[in-house]
Image 1: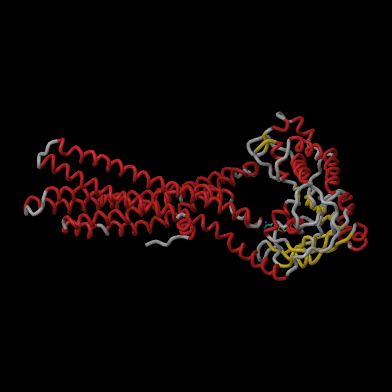
Image 2: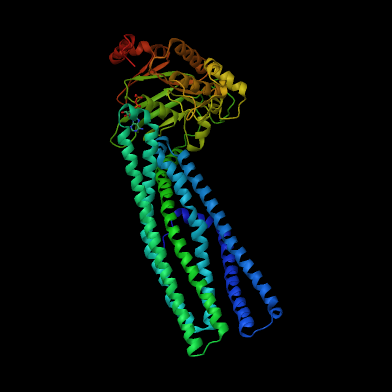
Length: 606
Ligand code: ADP
């Protein structure tokens, strides 16, 4: 009847116990429903037809009350099991999405709209709730209880049984027809919602630029358009849902009507039926159709959920292909057996973090590395280069020549299309990734400032619990103490989204303070392109020098002094490595380099 999606079958096999429990409770519920009808029919027969005294039926009435209470409890139990299954499924799905996003490579994780992803993680997963909390319990009930009722009716009066048997299939047939339609509609609704969230968040984040370029109105219209699209998709689903309910009610009324008519004829005209039997059947018939009808409603919400679950799955699948490619590559590396460390002399190991497999600072080697973001786009091919432990490398070149891309490749944030990056002679496996990142600090011009206090934002760099004194010491070393001193609440001032903003120079020093807490063995430094004031410039220079004294440092360099002091300069042009050597060497050998240095001297180079 329906094609289960991968995530659903995964959940079904993971949650076998609650499913079995659900089956057991449904069976008991069926017994309670039949028992209640039998007892009620019996009591009415005794009191009104046989005119028995109240005391003679008292016990039966008490039992009836007990059965009613049990029925309520069982019904509640089924609901609870459903809710628990839903809660677990949602937690699992969110965890799976987050795991995928954190494991995926950087370009993969950043692809697409942030708002769209948020909507999948929050809304789509929430929408999946009703599949487990309503659809599954109702379906389980529908698979057990109506059959039980039908069996009882057949033993009492065959004709009614046949009428029920003939009319009942109309309900599932109708459900399937409507369900098929709603599934597509609900997928459409989710696509609309994701687009709406995406447009909204993008506009919010870029509000300053939009205002400056006078495009705020256009974007407002975009948001309006996508919100209208979402509204239309929702209204479509509601329309189908209402028509669905109306049709189901009609079928149910008709079914009950026909059975009642037949019973009346048998009871009054042909006198071939006892009052007790007729009444019992009349009590059971609405239960029978009621259950099927509930299933119809649950089926509808189940379908809506499946549309949402499909969205979550699509997001998971997107990263799947890339993951498979990575593991194939890593499998090949394992077979090559380059796992042994080369014998580079270990310089004393800085910091406290211990990633046993790496001697620190490490030697880094690029072997025939080639990289492309997408096929037919910018290509970076730098051939083979190696950096000795503790070396300071400067990457220079025009804007767009591939400096940042090269830095990200060395950091392991991007994976080469071909060739490999070797750390201490062995390729990084994804299992080593965490311990490798334990040794790396990336000081960017635009570090992410989380919504939190100034101190929290520094402490995050350590990757472990650190004391307030450590944080203040790191801030001091990065030249941030003076900044903290003038903040309204000092280190406890709220910064980041919704808090106080930080200037470019402050942000970079924050990144530096994070690095001071970590004391990394590998520093990736994206030097500021814009001129900072002399004092900040000086603080940065000194702090970086201190931090880099025991580390391998790779800098995307824009300052002449950084370039001149580097042990090795990589001169990039349009994705290729034009030259590699010390300042004097390149000056003598490479006219383009001499030209760049000249431009720097004249202050024409950023
Ligand atoms: P640089 O740091 O030297 O200014 P980059 O390494 O940032 O240069 O960029 C090199 C080239 O790669 C540019 O042409 C840029 O447009 C392209 N590029 C950078 N990032 C991406 C990305 N995420 N996706 C596709 N192309 C990119």
